[in-house]
Length: 74
Image 1 (tube, rainbow, N blue to C red):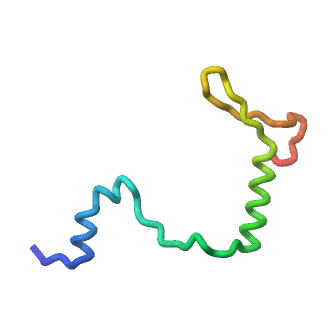
Image 2: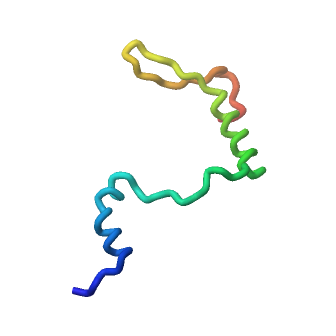
Image 3: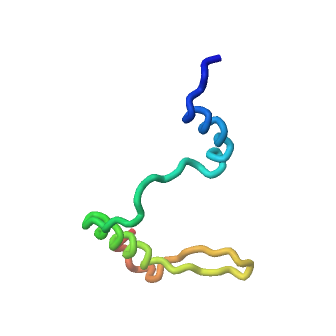
């Protein structure tokens, strides 16, 4: 059997943890929002605003349109 390097030993040792928790995310969270992301966020917020969450007595929830006649975003 060939000798493993440090990275291979680490991957073998943490295999089950990575299977449960998934791979690590290396991207930075402290960056400025781009104009494209601002437009996308505004569009998603407009789509979300057209729905209302209703609660059933058993605790489950479902969504219904706030205004059934408004078909602009559907």
